[in-house]
Structure formats: structure tokens, C-alpha cells
Image (cartoon, rainbow, N blue to C red):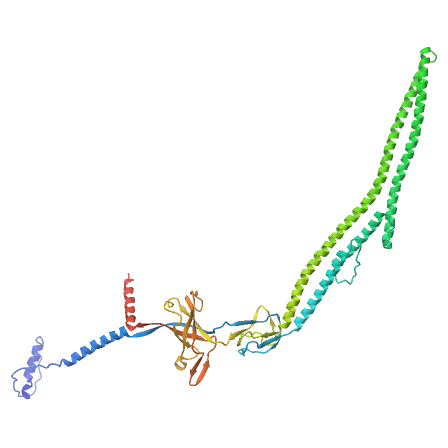
Length: 514
């Protein structure tokens, strides 16, 4: 076997051959060993089996990985967050009426059944309001009856008022004015007709007598003036007749003197004087004739004045009656307007009474549905509830669903009916697990960003397959309002597509470089 071993010299030569450029270094001297020279050199070679095995192993692994990546499918899930909420809406419980709480039967977080009494209101306020409305209605009805009696009476009659009548003072004043006007018209009618005033009060009879005396005095004065004028006219007629007789005598004398003057019996001076006397007599006759005409005219005017005095007195009476009737009509119009206003108020009071009656039946506030008391405001008696504001909220006890929000870039493959893994943030998933659900509803449009969601999002609802979490024999119920994180399983895709997608993005990134 020693013949196959190379000698030290051969090895040295081989080393020299392998490093021809290396400088010879002095070798330390060693003891001389006697060796036998080999007949031929021996080369060491490694076996090719292991290298082939490694190469084929790498090739097979690479091919298998590519094949697995091309064929293997993984589920793609879209994450989203939200909270649990009842499938029914949270109901605001309001009192049907405004009032003061007398008794509270529930507390925060209590579960109640539909129709269960939640609280009771104090009926004292409603009873007081009912009595007040009844008084108002009675007053309005009494007022309207008063106005009707005032307006339905004939204008020749008056309705006596009383200070105790439940009517506003200004209306009482109007009623008293109307009574006075009606009484005046009665007096005017009696004076116009010239009767004795039967049925009038003593005061009215006295006024009637005074008025009649005044009218009679005016008429008598006018009539006396006419009689005096007639006497003056008669005296003027006598004087006219005497003047006419004197004129005729003077004219006859003048005629006789004319013949005597012609025969020279008397002087012409006498004729001239007689002519002057005739002229004076003619002037007197003319004056008296004119005076007679004037007296006739004055008598006619006096008679007309007498007639006018009677007519004017009657006209004044009728004018006063007309003025009073106009004022009575105005008062009646105000009464009618007051009745219309009262009728309107009566209608409102009737409605309020009906509402008060209904309110007295709504003194108990009951639960409209099964649920849990939430945000209870009326926690103690004495709390004032308003019909327009909720006093508590009722969270339905029916099945909960998860309402989450998906970004608008992840909505493309989301469809109803997809499987969803729901994880309740209040319970660690490693210990309590998650809940499976189904996608039940997708919003039709994206919601704008908010402070809590600074992105456009689509609301979706997930129907849960279970309403509790179970672990180690314990059952943990879910509550409305718990925050959840969900994974919506949209589709399956190959592992290779992940790498190709990364490669595509890198290529697109290179294309966008400038």
C-alpha cells in the first residue's frame, strides 16, 4: 500500500508546479528520511454523487415551490372596525304630556318588558289645569250669552247690566252706553209721535215734557210773529184805501181847477198846489201798495217758518234717532266681534280640555317594547319631563349585529352573504376566540370623512351567528355598543399572485420614475 503514497519530494514538486511564481523560502532543516520514489503521481478527486443530489434537490424544491405557489389558494380578507348595535333601532321614550314625575319604577340598565310601567306623573297639575280651563269655558259662555241678549233685543228695548256680570269692564261700559242710547231713542220716538210717554221712566217723561214744551214754544213764537205781520198787513190795507180815496179827491179837484183856470176863475198858483197834492197822494198810494206787498211776503215767510219749525223739530228727532241707532249698531258690531273671539277661544279651550282629559289618562309612562333602560334622566321624583324631549332610551334586547365601515378602496369585491370573522375588542381573541357572521347589508353610497373616520367609507352590517362568547364553560353575553374588528373574506387567490402583484408594482414604480 505504501507504493500508492506519494513521496515528500513528489508533493513538493507538485506544490512548486501549482505555484510557479512563488519565491523559494528557506526550509528549516529536518532530519533526513529515507524514501522511495513513486513510479507515478496520484490525484485526489471528490465523488460527483453528492453534487448531483444537491443540484437536483434545489431544482425539485424550486419547482415544487413554484407549483405550490401557483396552485395553492389563500383567503383574502378585508379588515374593518365598528361596534355592536341592536338590529332594531334604539327607541327614545318620551312622556306624552308635560308634567312632574311622582314615582320612578326603573333604574339605569334594567331590563323591562313591553307595557311595563316605567314611571308615574303627578296628576295634581293636570287637575288644576282642568279646573282652570273649566272656569275659562264657563266665563266665555256667560259672556257670549250676555252679548247675545244685548244684540237680540229690539232697539226699542234695553237690557239692564250688573256690575257682577262676568264681562270685561269695557264691554260693560258699551252695554251701558247701548242702554242709554236705546232709552234716548224711546224718548225721541215718543216726542216725535206726540204721545204722553207711557212706559217711560220718570226721568224720560220729564225730558219728554221739556222737549215738547220747547218745540211748542218755538212754534208759538213763529206763529205769533205771523199773526203780528197779518195785523200789520191789515193796517196797511186800511191806510192804502184811505190814501187811494184821498188821491181820487185831489184828482177831481185838480180837474175842476183846470176848467176854472182856463176861464180865469182862480189863479194858476192854486192849480199848481193842487197838482202837488195829487202827486203826494199818488206817492203815498204807491208806498202803501209796496208795503202791502212786503207784508204779504213777510206773512208768507212767517207761515213757512212756522211750518219749517215743526218740520225741523221732527227732523232733529229723526236725526238724533238715526245717530243713536248708528252708535247702537257699532256697539252691536263690537259685541259680535267679541262673540266671534270668544267662540274661537271656546274652541281652543274645548281642545285643551280634551287634551287635558287625555293627559290625565297618560299619567303612566309604559315601555313601548322589550329592552334595556339607557340614559335615564328622570332618576328621582320631582323631575320635570317635557313632551318634546326624551326622558330615557330603550335599547332593544333582540339580536345584535355588527355595524362596521369599509374604506372605499376595499369595497370592490365585497358582496352580501360573505363570511365574516368578528372579534370583540373587549375580549382577547387568543382566549375567547371570535364569532362567525354573514354580511347582511352594504350601504349604497360612501359616507364623507369624520373626526373618528378620516376617510370615505361604506357602512355595512354583519349578522352574527352567535350572541355570546363561550370559554372554559363560561358564557359571556354581548352588549350593544361594544367595539369590534372584523375580517371580511372576499375571495381566494394563489400565492403566486402575491409575488406577481409585488413585481407589477415594482415595474409600475420604475415606469413612473423621471
